[in-house]
Length: 459
Image (cartoon, rainbow, N blue to C red; front, side, top):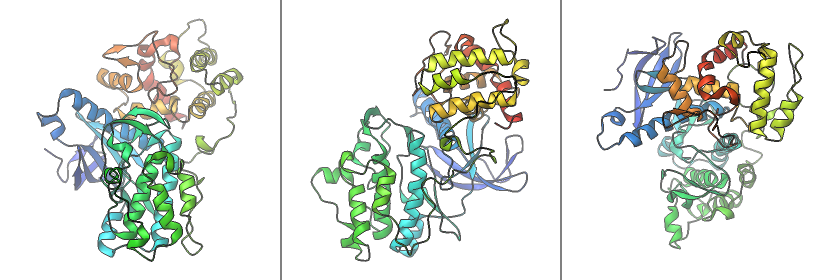
């Protein structure tokens, strides 16, 4: 049974207004905060728990994928990506709170207006391309770029990318296993195979196909049809108002084989660069929207982390180990310097009190070094996001701690890892640092104190 208007969630922080829609295994609601701000709350449909056709294994995967969506949104912050505001559990239901983007999606606009003028269409696609560059930088593919997942803000020429439900991690040109989720006409051929090489060019195909549709009001030929040697009709043959430059750019972006497409979003955007008469677009290096006003640029743009310590600790060794991606050694060095800062070298372990009193500047230095070296995958602030995404809060029950351990890979098949921690650069988000001698079971016991200290230090 879904939520009804007036129902209060998360300790009365949110009040449901109405259901917005359902899709796949998710359902979205319009809600208001205590201050009257309008937000969108996404959760899983009741069928996930009641449908006898869904096995417990598949149910666990669906819930895990849903939690991962919150993490991806939290990591990928940009003006043209829908922003996450919170994540929590309402009973057994995981929930994601996102900004409410008032407006229409590109599919609705094309249905209402017909094919769009080239300058307007390219401007929207250019903005989404900027967002994709940030997503790819974090090591993710969106995998579901299509007109329905691009919102245009009401009264503004601003596009916003939504729905990260099927986004996945990737390593360019490495064969990986991904769930088969696609939309005919917008998915490249590699998405039809559960195991295939993928890269930025996978999302480029879908973005080019979206531009094809917006300029012609025709869904492109599905990729399997091209495999049968049925040629894709050039968009300029459907709409003669399309320039040769943009028509050719679309065709290159929709090349059948991934290796024949541009290999980066930036390279493809150069092929369809807006004309001088179109509304100006911010550069590809435009700063992502921070979660709070930062005193420093976002980590992805920092060139140097200042090695600041309130107690005179030298962080050069940690910096060098992380720069060399010696994750195990860096983890041990993190343990050593934290014990030194907290004057707990004799005890050999940190307690909640020492974490609550840990100097802010030292905590921030250690966190920034990990975040920068890992491209946003590791660090205390990343662990904080994971903790919040599984419903972590002061006084959390043991099940919440177990969910956190499962998410960051410190707990496998119900067993807490001790001396078998994987120091894998592509390990679970938030997997490190763990200060390995403490073990996952120990470190997870102080995560609540660590998150509280991060919040009080505004990290």
